[in-house]
Image 1 (cartoon, rainbow, N blue to C red):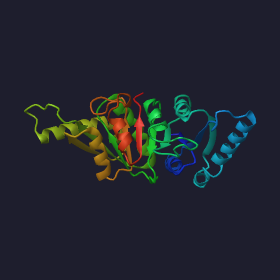
Image 2: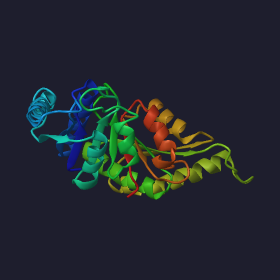
Image 3: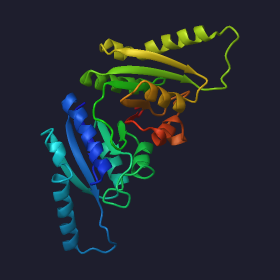
Image 4: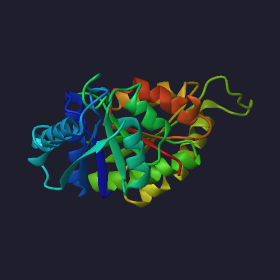
Length: 279
């Protein structure tokens, strides 16, 4: 991981998202680019006033909004980009050399950046081109235990590959979880023990990139649970510091664009969540 972009809007949650990103960047030896999206607060603004307001925003971003982050790392740059944050952040992730885009779960509401779930975060999540980290208020920056949902899909494989890179940089362990949805038909020959053993064998195959990288992996198989419930439950009971889910998967991990599991987790997770696009 080399380049992390963070949406910063002057809010407490924007500050927490930046603090989390810097914590990851320092341990992964990555650069952090703090971006604020600016658009005129009034329908009619003279060019002189526009330039003045833009200059004020640039000073705030480079000053008080990122001051605490600069105390931790020198690999921090700032930029104010004009435009709607939904479009600007999606465009940044699509065109720039970005390894991770970080946004706060809630933001300043009608304030400078509009970084709140249901607007910017959800829009970007529906147009993923790079992994997206969604950070809850007050989230600790330390990551020692990563929970990842796996199901053998291409999206799951992308999430595993991304997690292997991160966990190697941070020295974190991984809990790999597969959740079988309820109401699926099982053959009479299936027994709970056989089902669990076979599922754990599949998990071991799906997470080979992790074990090959020397990362400690624990496999957990759940049955007859809704995947969102299972993943959030494991994250809570196993004290996960980060939850990673691939998007546009199959089975239990249907893509965001169809309103599947990843979207449900996006709205319910109270720990940092990273959504990894299939491509």
